[in-house]
Length: 309
Image (cartoon, rainbow, N blue to C red):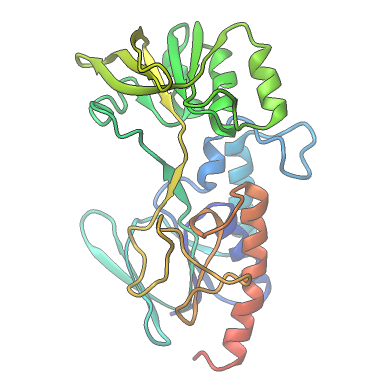
């Protein structure tokens, strides 16, 4: 039995672990992969205060992890398959592939984050890992000197296009609108890069190839014209969906599956909180995740004061 169980070791979960340990609570953090969350897959984080020259996402994620370790938060690196949250004793059930384990806590913090959304086009799953990727910084190396495309127009899409242009022969960006949603600085850098080409008002209709992706079929949303393109890789950045596989029964979520909380990060279940990208919110950035992780402890301390056992 621990005081606080945190599901997810991204910036929000790790910040919450530091605040909880500083407040004197026992903490167990559950993570199924590498600490750092989505931030760890970003090539360069330029907008987190304290790093005026920017910092590699993976390095920033490790700094969060080391900070939590310094305050003696404990970690369990196993997938969480189920959360039971009714009553004063909360349960976290993990499965390492061979057996289930059960842990108990007085409070649960859901910090499971979000994952890249798929396009939902034919053969997308078939070519995942064989030409289709959702992370330029993770997989860009495999496409060194090759021609690739990027699908999307937000910050991640444009920033990854710039990153890929450093190693790929060419980068073609397909965007369904006629202007980008990315921040102005990234847009200016991308437009100034000779290796990046933008194709507007265009969506991907189909992915083709044999064992490996070779052809991307697009459609112009205004004219209806279809066109075949030959690429070695297709990087997809069209938004995120919450990681909701282990939500406890009765948890209130919005129509997209994001957890609904109040401004103190409390959910509709007493003793259950949500922080970071998994929460219904307007902005999903490292800074806002860290903010959530710091705020959540104020209500947890109230919860303990008012009678949690």
